[in-house]
Image (tube, rainbow, N blue to C red; front, side, top):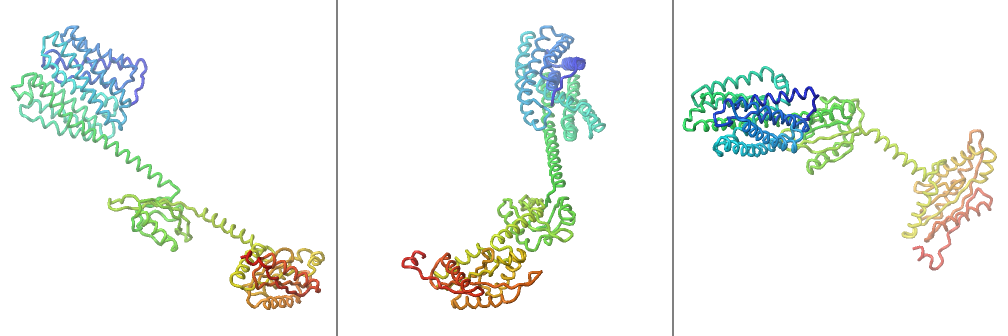
Length: 609
């Protein structure tokens, strides 16, 4: 409870009100006292002043304490006590109040915080028991010195009256300050609260006017007030019982007097015990109901928070049984999947893409078995028929019926991300293809040639499979470019590549090195006859004209063939084929020449291995 510093005018009115209440209740307690001196059944004033201090800033305490002290001294003087006795007893009471208020304020600065009420109860109880003992010792010494009273009997009567009074009226004062007008007009109270308190008052009057042992009849309406209205019901109800019981006992009425051998002091002690029992019975009920209210409020806040997260989240939140039956689906399902939550309830495995159903079932089984969350990506069918990529985090939670585990998953639409990843993968594959393929002719490039030729030479070394390389170019290609332009030259190269591909076998590799240079790698046990067959076939194909769009022209090819039946290396094989090509050009072009690779010199074969 935050203390607010009042305005000067309001502050002085507040001080006068506190002083008036403390003085009036002090006079009332003394007027109906049956014990010697000031020892009353219940001492009201200290509880009022203590509750008042705890509801005000600490800096203003000296003013309220001084006002309360003066008011109590005045009340005691009206009760025909001497100034010395009135001042000494009033100081003992003020000491009690300050000990309790200081202890509570230092440990629980905000007494209005429901989360601190349990600790507040323990601190307040301990402080009350200690402070009342201190003030009881001081007051009993004063009574012993000035009135020649019994120290022990006086201490016990004081201690009981002040503990009960502090518990009742301290709690009542705090409740009144905290609730204000809501004590009577808050929802659920109003006339019903007044009627309940009236019932307690009527039952208490009837009980304490009776000469039968029916004190227990007060407890049911008190418990109802505690259960229904919590601390306000306890505070007002116990105050009514205490006032009615004190007045009736002081006037010689009520079931307390049925115990005749106790005397006046014994009757006071018995009434105090009765009021203390009423407190012990009702205050725990009020605490429990207040804690229940606090917990219910926390549950409502938590539920509201989770519901807001679920209903306003862009992700789909689904709770389902281990069997796949959906128990809850968040409203965001309509935005992502087109289905209303009601349409998705129940078991709808058909929504999951048939290729992903096994994955989702496996994820659910793993989550239930391990108790650990899992993340998976799969496709769910949109209401209009297409599939949406969902990334879902699945985790186990206790089942609604308390038996076994349910599953909750949070899924988000990652269709755009998947599309971007697929496009990126397609681009990567295309880049990789372009890095291995000649863009103009679509044939493998030098990179693929090196890989395939390396593998062929490795097979030659291990298994003795003969390898041939054909080196080809287009005769007088520069003249074609210069005469007809580069577009015509490109068309000639594409046509030449297509005819070359038609002359080789599916297992042979045709690659373009660049310009008009092409290479064919052949692996065959029948070499060099197979290479010669391909060369003759290509030369024959090149006798047909090539359509370049604006004209037709003729182009021939020169071919150099190198073959090896024994282990060799790529550079030697290619150099031999290049030399054979040069020989074909020297022979007049439009022909081929073949040259075997020279065998390795002594020691080279072992080195190549």
